[in-house]
Length: 396
Ligand SMILES: Nc1ncnc2c1ncn2[C@@H]1O[C@H](COP(=O)(O)OP(=O)(O)O)[C@@H](O)[C@H]1O
Ligand SMILES: [Mg+2]
Image 1 (spheres, rainbow, N blue to C red):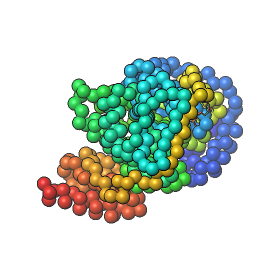
Image 2: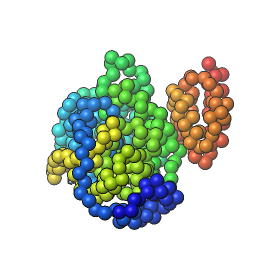
Image 3: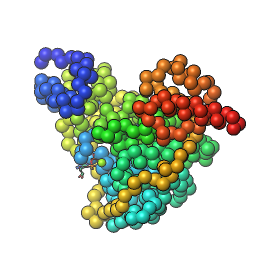
Image 4: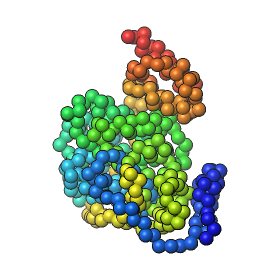
């Protein structure tokens, strides 16, 4: 076999902007790689996933078992005594997990909003308040806490706003709780890409805010005993800043071009033969299999016994949330770090020196209206930040 140059492929893929064309290119490349059995074994220990520290990211094509694996992993963590806060991605597939644990389900307030559950028990709480959700999750006596929000939402920006608020509340709660009182919590987000990079709809201001929050705070969660377990159907929709903060990576059957960048980095030391074998297997493996990367970068193909499916279990959401009432008003939130703003501006191509000039060097909390970030309106945003800072200083 002629040696296929991985660097060259990365360059080529970088030039192709269209997703279908990228996959077509990848298919051509892969057709040149001879088929060979995969005998990779680097001896990872899957128990590290449960006993060890660190965040978990599950990636894979839609329909190849991410949610199922997520629920299966969560069951194990719940059995081990963890408390779980779970974001449903609108699929309402959590019944098979909820039937084992005392569960409360948060749904939006509003006329016509309802949730019918069959085959299991749960308490349903109607609220539009992320603060209440965080408080009730920590204080309540429910191991499993589920947020069903997206099943009622048409506009993805409404959902991103809601979860940005929730994320803020979680961070505040963590920062206000002394170390000895911290309770371990798993924050589980099925289809994280919905919230920080929506497919096909372009990134809204709310999504950018949430992405900034994620990039800055994910690492901090560790010391607050919060473990994140997320899924995504595209690797390329999760920024490298978020991805690199996940210690355990689980790859289910994937699109070749989508997984290329990750695999090139993760298998950078693997020889060419191994690399191609693993890649081929990842794009063709069955739904019950996955490729697991441990925190040291070692990997193995594994299978996992699924959570049993109960045909009597059913969850049906009804109703539509157009916008949360509070969104009509201006919502102010404290951002306790400048880094989020810096990241945001850096992402917009601002130079550090310009940012330093604009934001000053005061490490104090700055009040910004996080929901008014608009990608196209960066100057207005910066002016707003400056004027808010000035106002705050005057008040003090
Ligand atoms: N380990 C598995 N073995 C066999 N079938 C599975 C497995 N995991 C999931 N499936 C099936 O694949 C389908 C899609 O699974 P799901 O978890 O919803 O995927 P995703 O969340 O990635 O879209 C489901 O019908 C499920 O029953
Ligand atoms: Mg799913």
